[in-house]
Image (tube, rainbow, N blue to C red):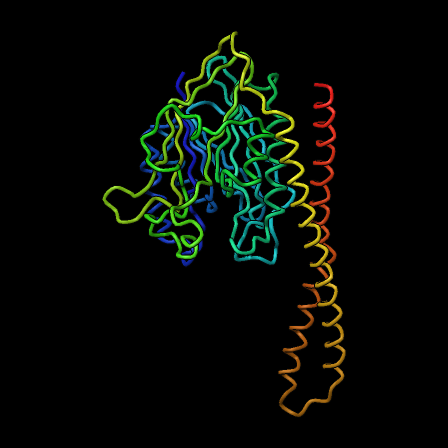
Length: 399
């Protein structure tokens, strides 16, 4: 059978100043996807449920099955549409998801993770995964590097542990990974998840270039700062895949798509989509996708542990900062509340005392709750990686 899959970051942030022409673009996305060209569509950044309902209404005539992954305070932003019935679904929240006080980033409030659905076409069982990893907001100083590495490792482990030959014949993973192909995060997802990159293994393409999907110079939504780091854009949106024994799969074609909207001067989104056409067959002669060697994965995991160590040092430094901030707030509260102030300045003093009280509350909450959650999340990832490293080393000794 031929299976046509699309992944698209729809850029649906429900804040007008942060997301240009959202309503117009969502309608255009819905119109394009309603043509029924694809069998499976994976979407990211559908934060507003009204946008999901809009797409669902437009697409349902062609792809009658859909699912939204609810998570966090504002939703995961992940949803999928399928011509094939959805048999089961599950959502795995990443342990680490950025910082609550970074409200303008929003990743913490979205509760990012990995959505999974099980489909079946005739006798071929398909495990479908959709994700959107933490964004990289500052290329000069990536404060979320450890979080993204932790997410990548969690994601690869979850896919590996839920996609054995007993559970499925075919694995398809799509989404906005927010990591480049050469990055540690992508390497651990691909190697530990035993996955292949459809852009690399494709037989043909209609798309020139390197498959870049984000921060393209041709996209009017691309910022100047992003172009300084990646003048030709970057490839961070992927469709990965694997088949188990008894099933064969080839990528007949893979394209970058969904650029400029026809008859408009603006694109569907600030990303471009990735579309892959798979040829899937049941065959007893197939041994499945060739396993990636343990020593390659061992190198990736060791590098991940280094990144986690840096994250733990940052968490420790943040802990010290919040402690000092809390002590200073209490000290200033005591001093200012004890001062005799001239008539007419009582209102000013009251305002300052409120600010200091809020600052103290923020420092205590961050120190005792949020910082501890981050520290425990990093330690959990570290221990999981260390356990897996021992397994890899044992396998290499006995092989």
